[in-house]
Figure 1 (cartoon, rainbow, N blue to C red):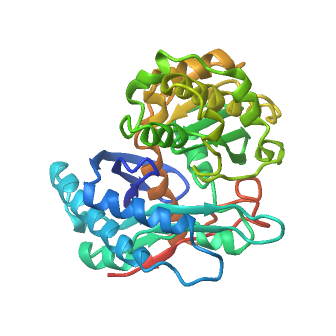
Figure 2: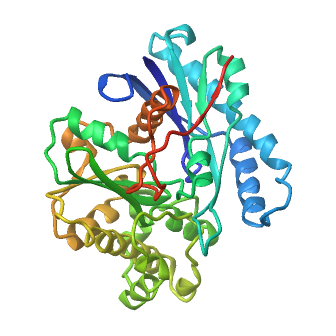
Length: 368
């Protein structure tokens, strides 16, 4: 099947798009990939929806802004894809299936016997009507309803991608989005995945809180700052890091309060060190230890993050591009791959990736 995958991360930067030809097990061909920046109007509505989601009590009615934001997200996806397909000599009838992750505005892991909550906004039915194609969306809810973490979900695609490029286990794949997550491939079909800690999201929140922009472009602030290792140790004392995998995070799960006294540059450098140390702590659970770690996602564009990983991890740190992967498109490719698996009823989450009791499919199908 020729599938168009969409991903919008918590950085609220862009709609990422990738076309993949796959049967949901092997990857036959990579089609074009690209992005379109989110409009300010959509970004502002998502920010407000996120704030309302964080204040949304369990059992209370869903905030009305969710439906409005979901429609705006679908329209933004459709508009982005119209231009993307045309620029690459494709049209909607060429696409067999669409996978839309949607915009995460809330993610809470299961706690003290209570199930988790996860919300990805994107009106799949509207996108199906606009495009005239079948759409798979809402990938995480079924896993959460079955007692799983709902994240991370890309592990099964990381396995397929590693096999496609002829890699040999053991290998780790690190995705640096708003939250950082790692896939550990031990060999065969043995994969484990979990969120290691904050990714770019906490740095973004710091920079925004200080009125210094939306993110630390190129690691400019962190590059002239000095990490406070005492604060790093304090942050690593969070109970999350003592919990065994599988486990998941929201980018709002850690407070910026310990950095309140620090200059912006030092605070940014401290968060970079925290991210790298959290990855190191996560890898310490791997048995056997991976021979290398492959970094994808937006965080690999920050030179300070890549330097910190190289300095603090005991294994070689490679970028996705070192292996011929499209580092900015991995998540959109993964959503395309998961869409086919969902359409065919194949599992997309597993006991060692989300903590669900048994391998489970997920996602909802919207017909045009």
